Amino acid sequence: VSGEGHVYFDTVSMFCFFLLLSRYLQNAVQLRRESSIRPLLPLTARKVAPDGANQWVALSALQDGDELLVQPGELVPVDGVVVSGQSSVEDSAFTGEFMPRSKVPGDTVLAGSHNIDGSLCLRLQGHPEQSSLSQIDQLLDSARLAKPPIAELADRISGYFTLFVLFCAAAAYTYWSFNPGHSAFLTALAVLVVSCPCALSLATPSSYSAAVSGLRRRGALVANAAVLENLAGISHVIFDKTGTLTEGRPRLLKVELAGELDECQALSIAAALEAPSSHPIAQAFSVDALGAAGYTLTALAPSQLDLQAGQGISAVINGDSYKIGRREFCGFAEQGDSDELMTVYLAKNGKLAARFFLEDTLREGAAQALAFLKQRGVRSVLLSGDSSDQVAVLANALGFDEYQAGCTAADKLARISSLQAMGGTVLMVGDGVNDAPVIAAADVSVAMAGASDLTRSCADVALLSDRLSLIELLFTKSAKMGRILRQNIFWALLYNGTALPAAAAGLVPPWLAAIGMSLSSLVVVLNALRLDRQEQQRSLNTQHVELASV
Image (cartoon, helix red, strand yellow):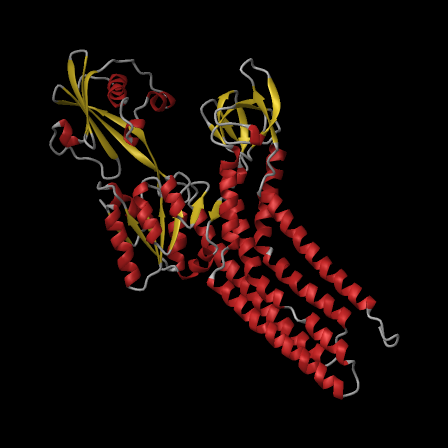
């Protein structure tokens, strides 16, 4: 304006260049991480017409019940049930496991899964925008946007820090205005540019975001980022039994005969009696389960069926009266039940005909998860609604510190409240509808993959597979996130504590200040990405192994 003095176009240009370069690199890293865990769904799908022909239509135009064709190598665009066809489907976006699983008619296939080697005809369930992948993305976004206490503290510090920087810039300008040696304007500009409150603000969200993404890749969906901070103080972990520590699907181990029936006859009668029941024990006697075990059954037609909940079933077959169920229901005295197995009795005309011994399969990784908690000094508690001896057997086998059988939802809730009243911090792992109040009351809650919708909606963490090793992963990822978070905060404070005095002393020109400010933010982000880099490498290694085996 005055026609004299220096022109600072180069300084302004370099400032903009380095600032935009830093933001570009940060966004590129973030997008690359997002694309690796969120499959990009197609915008169109092949809709099958009533005459069998198919045509491409937009996903937004699909309605509940429409049938779609998915060819080999394509991404499944919607949640649906297989109507016809058979194929291997890789659904690592949900389970964290990259091994394909076979899908046949009646199976559910989720949007974002990869169809590998066969054509599938799917019937759409719900609207495409309500797919499981969309719901997971919404939870993932809410977890990243949530601000844990330490993040709010960092934001408050950043606010005060900004005021402090403005004060330093004004002080530097005033000092160099009256003292020769450095330009007052350039020095004040360098102070403003070199300071990086964004590095301090990015320290927490970048660490949380990377940790949440890494857990999501392994099959643990964190709905609240504060969970990762709270895990560090957990003192007690409470487990449900059936469906959590065990698969909740009893299987037949052996048959003990006590009358004139042979093994196949006894099992055929048991299968006919249990057919109307939806109880998990009844599924062990289903035609499919016994057929898969190698038994050849005879089709029978029972009459006068009477099902008594929690006790057993009675009926008449070929003129003979049969009962199957608990010992008392069948009318027997103590028969020396095995403590380690579930026993189901079969009576014919009031006399013992057979005893069936069943076992609920322990989930993979249960023993390792309990050993890990014991190593960390975390007390493990088993609270089960099962009133049988199986609770004590399982608790002793896995090394639980405490256990209680026959618990109602109120009992579990009271136990958590008492632990919290004594200063404990409780993590609850469950799956049933009766666990929902307890899940909501716990300091941190985890819902298994097969949990009810109500339980999953109340939980802080929803597992996408039933691997109990994910419990260990939650603790280890939380501890690693804490270390990296402390490193980021230390770096942000160290950088600003060093750069600000140097700039105020006139030792840092504005262009160098722009580089330092940009690199400071980038260092924080790249350090946080170490939380997710291991999971990315694991995914790549797994895929390479699978390709090699193929």
